[in-house]
Image 1 (cartoon, rainbow over the protein chains, first blue to last red):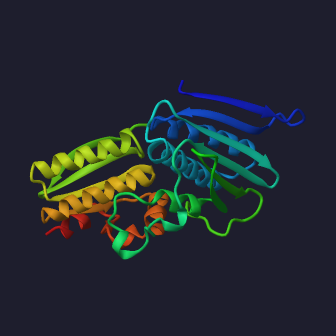
Image 2 (image 1 turned 180 degrees about the horizontal axis):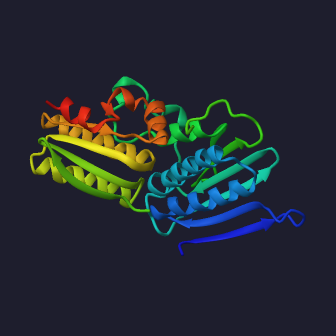
Image 3 (image 1 turned 120 degrees about the vertical axis):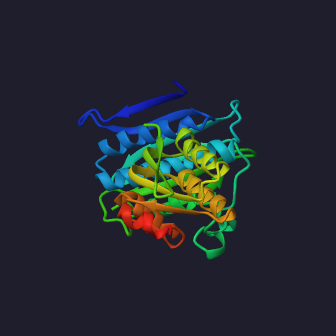
Length: 160
Length: 114
């Protein structure tokens, strides 16, 4: 098992309220994170479509943290936390990389970029979630925060 | 679920039947290797049957684009068949539906290569 995780439970409902996972900088961590967030978001009350969108956003963000942030350096970790604060699901992905400026990322929808093999991950995160922000943490590290409004009809649904 | 890929030839077109998820790691690696192998063997007409692929991430999209550009550089063509709703929606929001020729009928897809 290449992940360490903790749950906090709601004593009254028995539902998970908070999830914290420490992942190794391996590509398999994207699978683990996706699986855990699907279970968590289901227990938080997300419907099937929301779960799929959240799962894809988490997969993309953990893959980005592992491959681009930590550059698959096994001495570095990726930490994912998820917290259900009615009516929002807040997910944070933290890595130990140099960070990136989302404002300077190439737009993957521009005609000149359509045939690029990479560069769609952050776009998919923004499309799947209601809010995505990036901030640096200290001298080395980046935290990406993604929010999903669970009980509000989302502005867009990509996986119908 | 890992990706399974099997080849068959129909009227000179290589149909690659895929089953599973095309995601970062084994899934997209399997697709890249399968397409690289076809290109190296001189196959220039390739149809990807995605009927049993219900999940693709950005790495998988990258593998599809890689196959498309590799074949195009050899004067070949890569086309898609039988997209599931999820995969269709993903290709639509990423505007890759404007890149790939997509079919929901195998005979029509095969004929389009002629």
